[in-house]
Amino acid sequence: MTQDLLTEAERRQWASLGYLHLRKALNDDDVIRTREALAAVEHDFTSGDHHGWADVFDAGNDRDLSITNGLKWCPELDRLVDHPNVFGKIVGLLGPYLQLLGSEIFFRYPSVEPLVAFHTDQGPSLRNGAAGPSVQLKAQFFLTDVATENSGNFAVVPGSHLQTFPGKIDYRDVDRPVQIRAHAGDVVVFPLALGHGVAPNDTETTRVSVVLRFGQLFCRPVDYWTTPEPAILARQTPRRRRLLGDFGARTRPGDVYGVIPDQLDLIYGEEWVDSTQAAKDFAEARRALDAYQVF
Image (cartoon, rainbow, N blue to C red; front, top):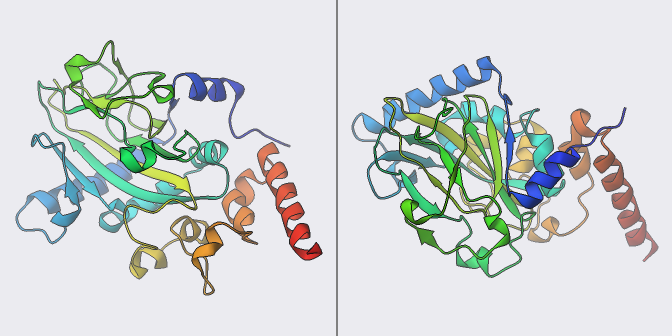
């Protein structure tokens, strides 16, 4: 039975508001396992000297612990890369010629001050290029509840992805920001062009979340230069290896622009191969291969 990767309501919301809120995408077991693994990561990074401090970044205010290259530090995150309740939505938005560009771990500590000012994740390079919503996006997996406002909520300016958003704005200077109320297990997907920040955390609970950054094959990864270190690749499924830049033994830079014979099989897999979008993409791939054979 055919299926759509995105509902019409989701497509409209993505186009107008600039984000999707996927409720209960992770089940309780997913949440508990991932949160326990991240608690161990936080302990390792905050209990004395740690050799991974090069991967730590923060908002410059000592109110959070933010770690890039998350797959390196927490293998439990592997399962999130193509999670069955989320990855189909990512493919629906970006198409099947995509990769995982980065992985981030966030611990947002209690603070009466806003934790992160409003900004976009584009930077001058993406901002000056073809940086529409279909080039790169992020998926934020919430591992703790932010169901009430001022709980360290992810805050957005709906529709700002359609405007020219300034580089960085103080949280208090943003007109009517929307604090997204999420439960542990929810996922919020948003393009890099969306203005967003982090609200104050008036609770006694640290907000924990993971962000995965996806983009088209031609985009440069941010966690590594070409592929992650061999130990990370070795533990992955074939689809995840491809998402991490592994094209097999015969790999050339031009592969990201050409016809990749097994790309659609790997990305759609058994889960999404019967979708209407997969049917269109497989048909287009066959036409492309035929064109090469003719000439």
